[in-house]
Image 1 (tube, rainbow, N blue to C red):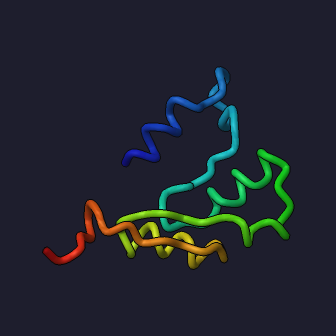
Image 2: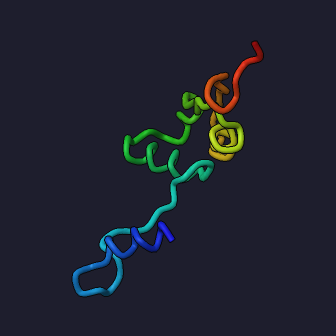
Length: 83
């Protein structure tokens, strides 16, 4: 439903298609890493210097794994260290 609402706002004036390409970038979809890499002209060989830092294994750490980059689990937020 949210994607449909966004599509409506992106329609061309004549109603024929969208003004830009639709790209789903929500975690853990690795597409966002490719977009960042390409927008900043970072060669694929530099992915070894990337790291995904997050507190949610099913989204943040999964994104790192799917994108082929290192990840670091922060013990805050969703996952917390034992007291």
